Image (cartoon, rainbow, N blue to C red):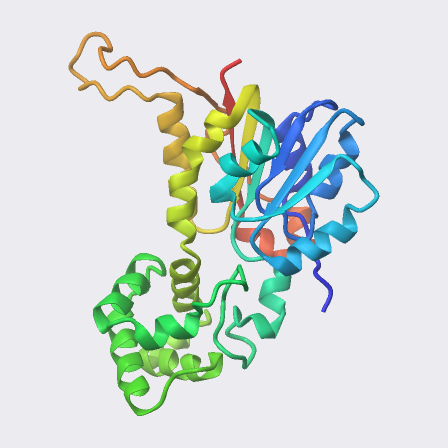
Length: 311
């Protein structure tokens, strides 16, 4: 299966990055190089593009797609390691960073990756296939309380307790190994009246397991301040999120970077000494337009937020 990557809000991202021909730009979630293949076209010979991805199949596809360009460096890593990656490349600061979070179309559509509840496959969901731990291990090894917690917090699943309880009951009989085995448990845990509302009852559980397995929220939360610090004056950080949990983390981090003061509101002047790192460009997130929604329905939940470092 070919690694395809339909870049979300491509025009908005390119405008948001304010690309300088001689600048240095990082695509922290390279994927199939959908965004990067357009960023590189806007760079001169003196410009530089650094692509990072934890998915080896994405690395291979992006390497092939960007092969014509000499000023590209591709690194197999997680964007959480961006500071070390740039240091090893001799880069102190960059003019722009892009994160396109979530799961790529290729990862969803490739049944062997085990991300989709629509295909019967081995439970996997690893973004980095070089790691050993999989979704199957979470389903079969986590305690009932742990399962309930991740389903409730990461999936915002109303029936987290029932699903966790039934997972534990079923795995006592037989190890849960496939997506369709998990689907049956989820569906049997949710009232028929709720299932008839039209939305797939498995979506929230799969989201929760995927987030837990790949540590998506903690990685994001722990990386944002470092990425802002790596920006050159006037540099921009553009982040596309796909659900409210991610978006809330980005919104709060950008707000804190812009207004970091922790003094009590009754203080007449700031005494904490914290200085603003820049400006939130997007007071409200940018969303996909009607034309893009028609072409790419998966863009419907996408939100783009942009932060600019102090000039």
